[in-house]
Amino acid sequence: MPLYYSYKWAEVMSADAFAAFEEVGLDNEEKVQEVGRRFRQTVLAMGGGTHPCEVYEKFRGRQPKPDALLRHSGLAQEGACAAK
Image 1 (cartoon, rainbow, N blue to C red):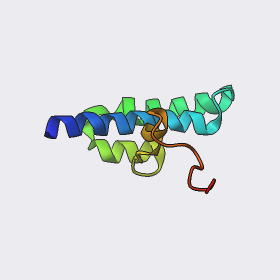
Image 2 (cartoon, rainbow, N blue to C red):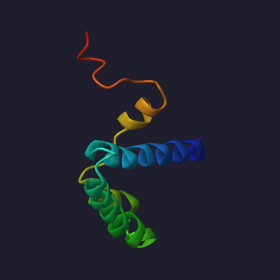
Image 3 (cartoon, rainbow, N blue to C red):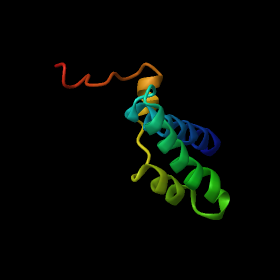
Image 4 (cartoon, one colour):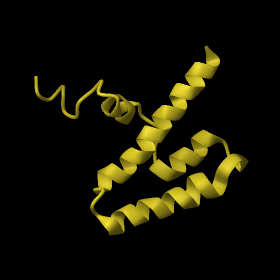
């Protein structure tokens, strides 16, 4: 069970990281490059020398959220609660 949890948590972090690019607009090349630089300077540059949660928070400015994974998996829609 712990291995599956780790795998799912990695998926949460991956989807949430990609959401950082989606949030600036994937067609906005300047902003995408800015997010890419921030990703490189945090996640890639800091690697295993710093606790993963701390590295991620430096990249996103917050802890990971499962929202993007749920959306990418088709289990949630943006604004689904607002539509009710």
